[in-house]
Picture 1 (tube, rainbow, N blue to C red):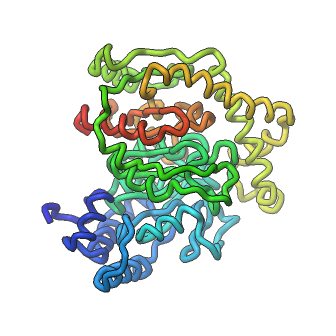
Picture 2 (cartoon, rainbow, N blue to C red; picture 1 turned 135 degrees about the horizontal axis):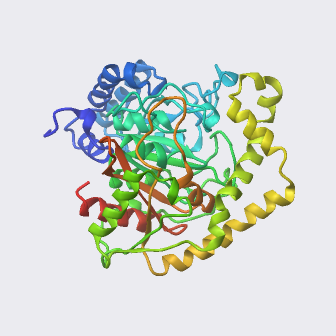
Length: 445
């Protein structure tokens, strides 16, 4: 192998190396465990890690290969799983003492699909409290004095630290895209209803998504192909053909993509260095590729509609936790739930009914442009570990359920990563990833 350390391999390259006999799964998992031993005390990406369990899966994968058994696309490749996604072999405690010791008896759908593809379930990555805002122990791999983002903090940090080549998270506001930006990795929030949420902690059904982390766009596509499979147990999924994300993402666009530079109604919340970086990026790509576009007036209310939907569902879905142990909930989560109880049914219904209206308006933009180019966060990861940063630049796209991807292409004033978020039309995930790979290649990412 040309690479010195297997832990630095991409998921796609690692799978190829194992399949072609250049590397065993046990060697790869051992390299990742060594990396974890080197960085975990400083970063704190893992909630549950059983080294022997991970190695046992790797040895079983190697034995299956030696015996000539069929190999899945991810055969022997380790993947981290956010600790709000059920695993029958490991605890799932949802970032809260109220669920300490919880042991599911069944894998979540996304975990089952990863196992079917041959993946090694490396362990459970740290999440914020119930995947909301109150942070866990994880620190930013680039600066331990800064947040890694949330709520998929451990998943983003583990990939950024070369602890695993890929990880799974979730997003109900900015929980995949924001930490990917802060930690300097690629993050992907697919179209709403394209990855089953069966077995994942329910926060808010209209806006809950499974998210993916990796170190390249092709890796995101590779992972997405394994898990974007129809599941009748998720009420928001519809039967669909295999997405063929990797085939499309790896191909060249027939013509150079065009981007709508959308600052969004919250542009003033972006930091000065981030604003400057995006202005420079648009200028660098040129007017034939990028055009600034302003979202129509209804989008100015999108943040409020998202809040009504989210907090109403938090109040309902975590009602038992509130009644039995509200003193063990963070002040912020308690206030969100208490506010959620005050919304009227008409407020909630109106907010949900606005989503197709917003997507209709976005359709006009996507008739002219391949993707929206926009910040994934206000800027680089903030200093301090008491909060996870503002998700506001993700809120509109999560509410609309559109696919979004962030690429680690920019740098803040302090040398910290700043991502570039691309957004595509609902259901057109493959084309969005192809556009993202084009931009990744164009800018040397």
